[in-house]
Image (cartoon, rainbow, N blue to C red; front, side, top):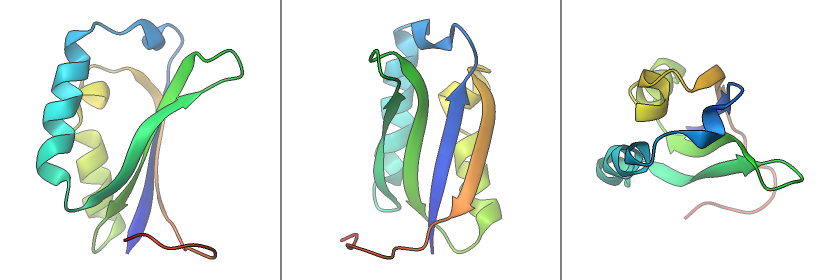
Length: 94
């Protein structure tokens, strides 16, 4: 199954220390077989307001565990997180 993983940054979190970017890349790298798509969410001004990914897992708890093991979660940058099953209606993931 595919799950949408989303973290909404708390106020001020868009100015996170640069070393977290390296930690995020390290976190994302080993999961490349299961992480299908990932990136920042931005508002109309271009400010980062969150992070989103599509993750392949057998069940939602596995997807939540992955989201909660990330450096942004561990650094408490998120105000709120979600892991939701994603049902593709149009298009395809390869």
